[in-house]
Amino acid sequence: MISKKMENMVANSSAIRAMFEEGNRLAKLYGAENVFDFSLGNPNVPAPEAVKKAIIELLNEEDPVALHGYTNSNAGYEDVRQAVAESLNSRFGTKFAARSITMTVGAAGGLNVILKALLNPGDEVVVFAPYFGEYRSYVSNYDGVIVEISPNTEDFQPKLDEFEKKLTPKTRAVIVNTPNNPTGVVYSEETIKKMASIMENKQKEYGTDIYLISDEPYRELAYDGIEVPYLTKYYANTIVGYSYSKSLSLPGERIGYLVIPDEAADSENLISAANVATRILGFVNAPTLQQKVVKACLNEKTDISFYDRNRETLYNGLKELGFECIRPEGAFYLFVKSPMADEKAFCAAAKKYNILLVPGSSFGCPGYVRIAYCVAYETIVNSLPKFKELAAEYK
Image (cartoon, rainbow, N blue to C red; front, side):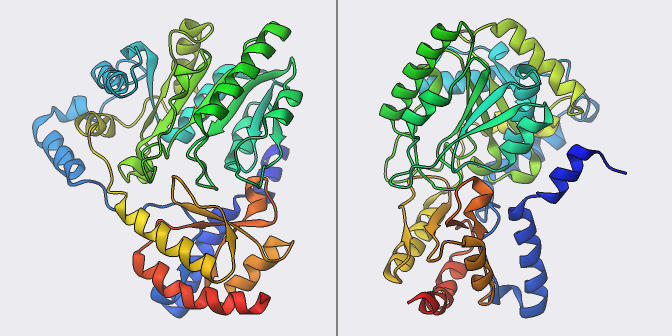
């Protein structure tokens, strides 16, 4: 008999993963070329050639016992952490050291590590809808309580008036995700400054520490020259979670890091707690080979021109068909308004045309659907006639 907590988690298991599995089923029936699976944010662009080169060189030149063994610290190799810190300092004008970096099993592993380190039962974690639905499970893992800020469907910037009202003495952390999954919106510098001011005032009012956790797997995927603010520069109690899943197209390798700056409250203990959490959650340390790979590839990036072409083609194509959606500034998602109130019913209707979409309720924002356009360009082009047939149902 499984636990009561897992019963709820199984019952509410990820709609994204379920839709992806449905896509595999339909592909076997109709052929992959006739199924338009926009469910999963699984990069279609290959990793840079430098990644393959680094892996081969490491396997040929490094001591295999050391390369595949445990790291001396649960935080990861010190030379890797120092290289990450120096790279961030050169890019963003920060002053991080190796001690500020904890290598993690992707951004998801990093979020679980920092929430384990921070949360007491009943502590509140604020999220801005629409948000990545797994945050609910991550917070629940440590008996925290999710507090949702309702979506601003005009431009999907956070509702800061509601945010200010919902911060309480129990607020332990706020999670932001920019560029955002599922909207593709980048939170503006003005938004970040106002958010930081609100949090600083609330910390003083309540005499508590409120941590801002910046979940950044899509940082490098920004278009049209959009700048993505680096949040440690605006708010001292900021912790950054990063992943190379999208920036280097390595989602299955599960490699990322946490940044815990010296300026963050109780940073020394927090760094120690993150390292212990890495061990006791069963990660032990981030994958050793991949740590060395990302060190060798810190200046490499995935060619996002492929995603940009998909973005332009799909956005313009859907707008011409009468669909309402905000133009994404980053990531690789379109968030489209459902032509009917029940977006799950709309997703079901789309499936008749072998179009697989994810309902917005999975992100705390019903009435919308998410389309992941990190697919082959041919999939985008070939899907548009099917979207036209779907649109015709709703005139």
